[in-house]
Length: 79
Image 1: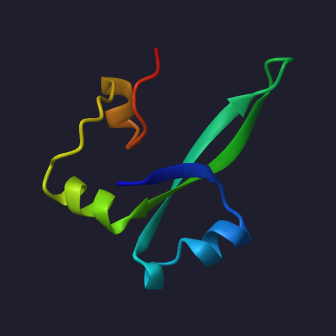
Image 2: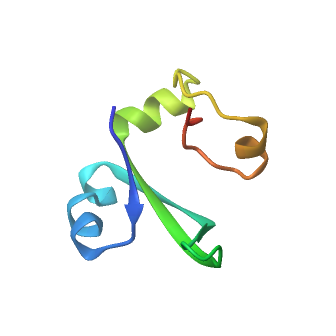
């Protein structure tokens, strides 16, 4: 299973295409710079067919916080 996150780019969109067994999801989020100013960002996750299969069978061992679940995120909790 492979799950890749980053920002939208042509290279990944070409290599990780639906035709090659990948799916793509975008997540609207924000980051803060060193001065505390917020900036809107669109993060992208690419998931291969094995990850998607495990996801549909509810066999992914990723723990999300309540906040992450409410936000519709799919990235794991960070310690």
